[in-house]
Length: 558
Image 1 (cartoon, rainbow, N blue to C red):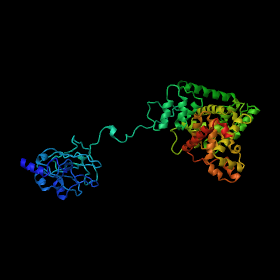
Image 2: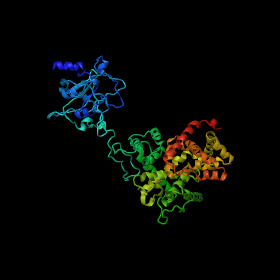
Image 3: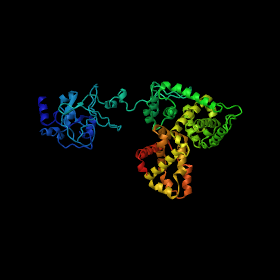
Image 4: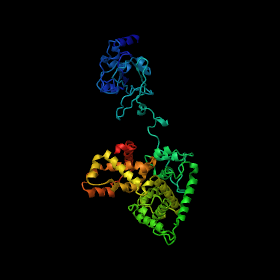
C-alpha cells in the first residue's frame, strides 16, 4: 500500500495536488469532464496551484480510470468541457473532508458545487458543500459561503449520502424579527372623532398611533400639558395644517385661544359668553323668533337710522358672499354672518364696514365646520354643500359663530388701516405689488402698462379680500395656514403672495393683446379652480423668496 501511494504521488495524484474541485456522481463523470472553476465565463490558466508552488506534475493530464476504480474522482458537477481533476487516495476518501489547497487568485472566483458521491451500502449522511454552485433543474442558484483554512484552502464536506434534499443548499429562514426586510403591517387604525364634544380634544400620546405623520406631529404638540411653543407651532403650520387640527391651531395663532392648556377651556367659555351678551346689547336676537325662520332679512325695530343703514348694507352684501358655494347661501350661515359683521362694525366705529369684510369671515366658518364634521362626512359629501340645519346642532353652531367673530376680529386688527378713511393700508399694498412685479417680471409689467391696465383696478380686490375670491375654500384655508404662521402675514406677506400669483400666469396674461380680455381675466379671477394644496405651497414658497429679497429694501423697489 505504501508503494502504491508513493507511485500515485509521483504521478501527481496525491490529495494535495490539483485545482479546486468537488466529488461528483459516476453519472456526471461519464457524461463529460467538468470545469473545476464552476463558471463558464472564467477560464483557468492551465496551471494548477501545485505548479505555482514548484510542483511539476500537472493534474489535468492524469487518467480518470484509476481514480474511479480505487479512490473516486474529484471533479465539478457543472459541465463546461474542462479537463478532469486529480484523484484522491483512499485515505482521503475515507475521511469526511478533502482539502483543496491553492492561493487566492485576483480577479477569479472559486466555486464549489453540490456533490453526489457514489452510493454506499446502507450509508446515510449529509452531503453539504461549503460553497455550492447553481442547482441544475430549477434554474435557482443557492450560493453558500465557505470558510477558508489557514493555508488558504476550501473545506469540502465529502459525505456518503447519494442525494441530498434541495433545502440543504439554502440557509434556513431566520426567525428573528430584524431579519424581515419589511415590518409587519400595523393593525391599529386611526382614532375617529367621537363627536361628543366640540372642539374635538387632541389625542393623548398614549392613544392609537395616527397614520398621517403631519397629523401625528400636531397631535403631539397640541397635547402638551404645559404651554405650547408658538414658534414651534408656527414653524409646523407654515407648510399646512391637517383638517382635523386646523381649527384649534388657528384659534391659538390668532391669540383667541391661549397657548396655556390649563387656561384654554375657561377662556374660550368666557369669550363665547361675552359674544352672545354683546349680540343682545346691540339689539340683535341670538335666537330667531318663530316668524323669522332664521331669515337674515329681518331688521330689529329698536335700531337707530344709522344702525339700520349699516345693517341694510350688510344684508345687501350677504348674497354676494361666495355665491358659487351653497354653504354660504344657507339661511343659517347668512344669519350667522349678519350678526358677526354687524357686531364688529358697531364695536369698531373707527374702521367702517366695507364690502369684502364679509368674505374674510367665510374661511373661519369653513374651518370650524370642517373641524366639527371631521370623520362624519360620507365619501360623496363635502363641506361646500353641507346641510347645516340637519347636520350641525344649534349648540355647536353657536360655538362656531362666536369663534368666527373673535378670530375675524383678531385678523382685522392686524390690517386696521385697510378700513380707515382713504384706506392707506390697501394703497400701500397695491403700490408695493406693482414695484415687486416691475423688478421680477419686467415684461409683464410693461405689457400691463402698454394696455393701460392699472394695478389698483384688479389688485384692490386681491388685497381687500385677501385672495378669498381667487381660490376655492379648501385652498384658501391652506393659504391662510402660511399667512398665520408668518409674522405680519396678512399685512406684509400677502403682498408677495399676490406678486407670485401674478407672475405665475405671466405667459397667459402677456398673450392677451386686448385691454378688455386682459382686464376681464384679472377681474373675474385667474384659473385656480383646479389648484391643490401643493400648488398653494409652491406659491407660498415663491412669495417667501420675494419677501426675503425685497422686504425692508424700499430703494430696490423704486
